[in-house]
Image (cartoon, rainbow, N blue to C red):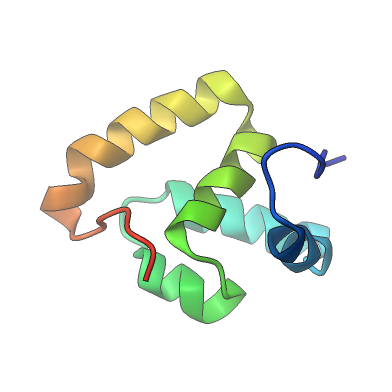
Length: 86
C-alpha cells in the first residue's frame, strides 16, 4: 500500500487517496511513458508535474524513480515535456 505520510501535502494526499488501484496504475504508466505529456496527466488526474513526481517517488521507490528522473531530464527538451508546475 502507498505510504502517504512523507513528502506529500495534504491536498496531494487527498487527490491520491481518491484514486483507485487501476487509476494509480494508469497514472504510473502514463507518467513513465515518453509519449504522454504532463498536460494530459493534468487533464485526467488534476496533478501538477511536481505532484506527479512525488507520487512516482512513492510508487516506484527511490532507485526506479531516479532512473526515470534522469531519463525524463534528458528527453524533456526533445519531447516537449518540461518539468514545470503550471
